[in-house]
Image (cartoon, rainbow, N blue to C red):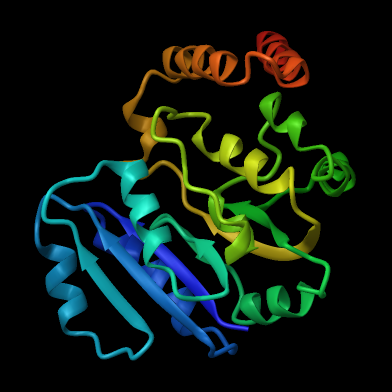
Length: 245
């Protein structure tokens, strides 16, 4: 088993260092890391040029691709048979993260989903731990609530790979999960964690009007899945839930 870990990055060297450090600490050694850099400056390029890590590959975009196309660019470069998209504000919480994921890939498993902690705080809501492994088998429920978390929580076989939809913004993650999971056998690792870092400068949710973007995405999704009544129902349910939260 050989992993490709894709790290799309943009103008934040300190977070990239955390993501890279979590890769470097892994006991499992059969992996490559691909950095796709969409930065407006050369800070990250200069830093990476002084690293001598045989598993690290760096790609600087000559013209800005934008966030989602930069993610897709990384996917097209992957050589591994198992892939993780680790954004620069995410990191693997333990040095045996890849070891655990590798062991979880039984012959019939296509996707392994890990848990998430936000700024080091792990989810303590017991219902989350009960429902998440069940809801993964009903991926249309993602259109009501993204119960998975960030993209790095998913590790998938290369043959299951889907590209992100650049016409979406807020919904881009969970719509991608839906397409991945609807044709996959999935396994959930409750005690394996991705650490997500929130509130930093440049975080997408800090730079957009979430309500307007979510409304625009829902309109796009309803057009994309016009004949899929269940998806349209869960979009409506998600909207109703947010009104009462």
